[in-house]
Image 1: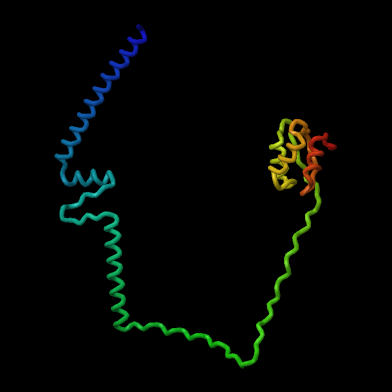
Image 2: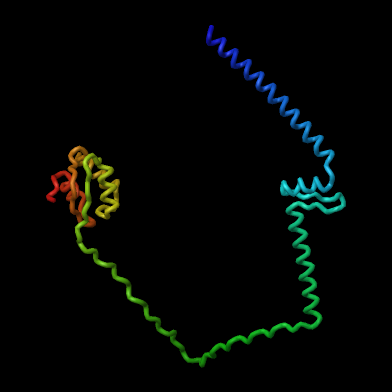
Length: 199
């Protein structure tokens, strides 16, 4: 019974508040319509400027943005026509530049000039410097593969995960800092990370 009473009280209150707001809205609309009828031209222009608008006379031309652009283009084309007339009247055109002369063949067999090709760049030999990778406690196989990939020890994360899954090492990965070399075999890496680090 109390639940229904609370609902009915809320519904009634909502209807009353809605009716009051509707009446206020009607009053507000009526007052603005009557206010604008009594404005002078100066007051109307001042109100329009405050709203960043313009008041134009009935006789003035009202253009959309597209029409304004077309009008500008037509004015520019009429200006260029006037400049063409100025050219006809007596402006001098610049001379055409002379073309360079082409060498004539003597009839002899001319060999094309030899072009020295640059030597192929040699790929630098990677120093087998040890790469240190820290494996934290709680890292799973995917985390370890991500660390090895970002350090440059392996070049294919999924291939390493597949090889390690074959060996079933996911639960036997040891935490610590390990030393690897770039391009080290997956079997060697798996052997290192399943044994306690030497450091």
